[in-house]
Length: 172
Image (cartoon, rainbow, N blue to C red; front, side, top):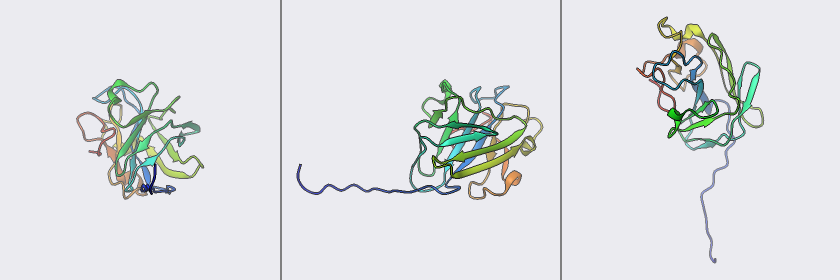
């Protein structure tokens, strides 16, 4: 092989809120239309993919490491239980061994880089549903505006999709 071969290469160290927690399914039952599994959706807000292998999801004091996975540019990755529910096949989803339990009433979720840098944090509460008919299970909480991540309850609501959630796709 002779000559110069060149490939574009980008080295980027993600910073806080490049990837945000954008959907939380803490109480999947009774099932409305999504899999009967807890999940957390991540949204990559930047213009290139981010490899999240060996990153960590924390729920309360429980911390678990994500296996290999990529959050495409301006797109989504779903973290969920192991084994991966068949309904997530074909979606950008990763089964996290011993996925941490999500509190139905609320709690704090953190997404950490391998160096333990906090990339995203959400302290959610059941009151964020703002719809009594949806706070008893089967409906996810969705981030309304991914560019306004510091507005707490005012920027979250119960999913509006008839399926109860929009894992791996744009929020309703």
